[in-house]
Image 1 (cartoon, helix red, strand yellow):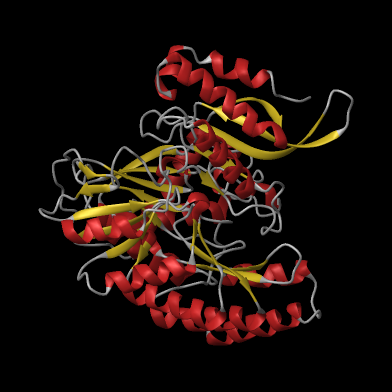
Image 2 (cartoon, helix red, strand yellow):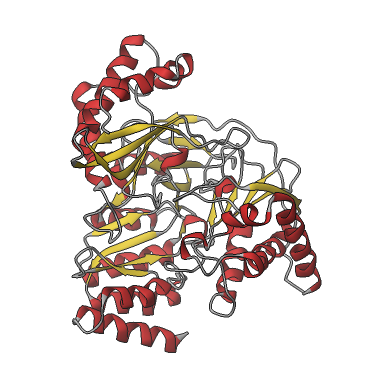
Length: 504
């Protein structure tokens, strides 16, 4: 691996020095979790954090990187990773080279490689969970990385472990998803995916936790045998059931699973320790009880998912005096601080008081086209405009729901399963003139048993989106209801408002 990193650094210096094309460099850098940003003058590094765990050693390393390299932008992704932005070549090389010694991998963080393995961020402490799924996510991360580079893995293999039917990591929409059951087993969902041409996963098996890695290997082997590597746009697991037909796909998966069992794929132990789900109690704004008596979690959602470097330093300093406290990243850009006594929780809530003030401000956005090479629209700027609009109108909490904004069809904000979703598109006016726009969806859900993609109601010019959401908010507020009840009573009302703003 050391030799590969040295080759990556040589390519990085060559690219930023003008000696390599962006396309050639992207084919190398993605495998190390790094990309150049739009314009090619700066880069980013994506840090793998299995299950979104940001423990003290990792946090210390990141803060040290911020200090040494003058990092000004840290972004939380929808796959529970952290992205360090606006880096020069030497910073990219240093971070990629030093991270493994601090329990952080960057290898495989981008390109045609398996992504960070996800887990419910409050797994093990959330009273509503069935059991702690984090140990299985961590074991899976290690196993997948041990295979990377030695066999032909699917493009962007995404694996997630959900601890409850809330399905907060979208396990039933992943290439491979494990949904915890009250009986201590997993419902296994396979061949799902968001992004362009999305598919829900198929419920494929019920598995003992010890069998998790057998299913990982089975999914990989099915792709090796039946995946379409010749067509990059279809080189994902979600197209295999369509190619084979669902019955043949299930047969192929069952054969691969049996073979994985014979091939000595390791088992994971010990068995899951289940506990009876209970309601989580909100004892103060953003402070909830854990299932461990006397301990609490604190949630903080920085608008747009960007964590200010100064805030990371303050959190690091605060946690030094709080034994057992730990940061967990979610898939919706909320950061949770777990294992806090009540007094420490109050301190942390005060420290993070600058975050989202309501569910709408806690909306999700990808990093946006000013940074991302392939982004089509500046999703981050749109979110800021929407938040400003909501504050100007003083909408009560719940008037507008959380929205998900993806700058392009790659669905980095999971817009398809949002209550309201926006995705950057190119549209045309009635006269045929091109106009930057967002396609709008409504009614998506990640909830296990009620999963669905939102329905598209049209495309709205980018500069009219805030006025559209303002019209929705005013209509909902006038009804005397929250958005959820208003929409449930008349699902067509949302589309009727949208039709006044759509183009084409």
